[in-house]
Image (cartoon, rainbow, N blue to C red; front, side, top):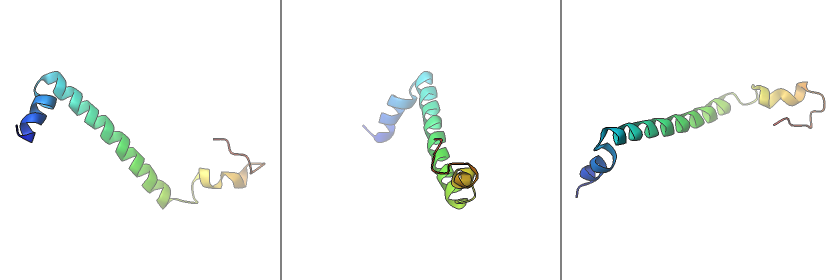
Length: 66
């Protein structure tokens, strides 16, 4: 059995399997992409975000609200 035949029969042989595969892959892609982009954004804007400077403006700077 070839790999293409295996993937076709297990993931795309019927309409509901294809829809489930596409939605699952899209959901996983969205989560992964958002996590990566959040890390890129945080690295590019380190020190300029509220979570980085909050302690300067709140009284009792030792406390963390998270």
